[in-house]
Amino acid sequence: MDKAYNDSYKAGERLSKLLYVFTAPTVVIACLGSFGRATFMTVQPTKEIGIRKVLGASLSQVTMLLTKDFIQLVLVAILIAAPALWWFMNKWLQNFAYKTVFSWWIFIAAGLITTSLALATISFQAIKAVIANPVKSLRME
Image (cartoon, rainbow, N blue to C red; front, side, top):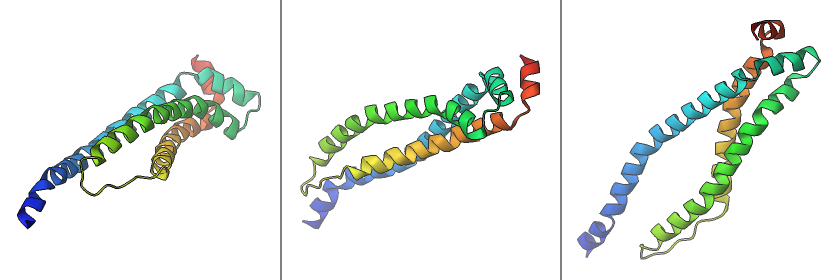
């Protein structure tokens, strides 16, 4: 009986190990893509940042200007992914003998972690762009 019980959950254990192996590279690739997009979004409006700084915009105002669009994209991605993830998790959990229910706070926590990673990425690039000398950015354009 023990052998039959263990055999029935071998596939789940293999899937779990496989997910652990592929999750880390996926997160790293997603962060690199996010970093690349953040870099592109802060290099593109160099002249606008320079003009705003010359006119007296604060660090927080310019950073908010640059992060607003990026965070909106992340929130839309979360809103699209959360229902799909809930559906897939619900279908997967139906195959088990002992049913469990997952809470809504898991999606909130995942969304907060994702948003904070994206905010950290874009904030780093935005602060780097804001600290730059506005005269150089205006002269380059």
